[in-house]
Image 1 (cartoon, rainbow, N blue to C red):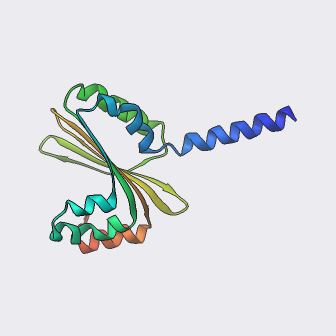
Image 2: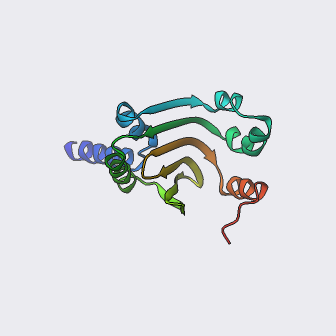
Length: 154
């Protein structure tokens, strides 16, 4: 009986560890941020112009909420914390872009052929901006978004 209980607990803890979400990082580090915000995507859409909303409407329809963290102080320390979080999670790096000294990385967390979370990290010498989006996107949804917005990696 003790062995069964031990293995059940081990499986439970292992499954929890593999599904670490950005929300965990957000809650642990929001107090150190200079600005933080968590919103339902329905509220986010009300802040967008009609043109911007039309561009990302398919993404917002498949998203539940958005979390934003902005760090202007202790940028290096927070970047190390975020890197450690990513390294110990099951997020995959989708793309990394260097634009005039700013590093932009996009990470995804997949489960059962669906992208459940998207995290965007924008790191400059002065700021670190982290954006987490809880989603239910398929790979086809991503391809359609890229096609509709004329985004290509060729």
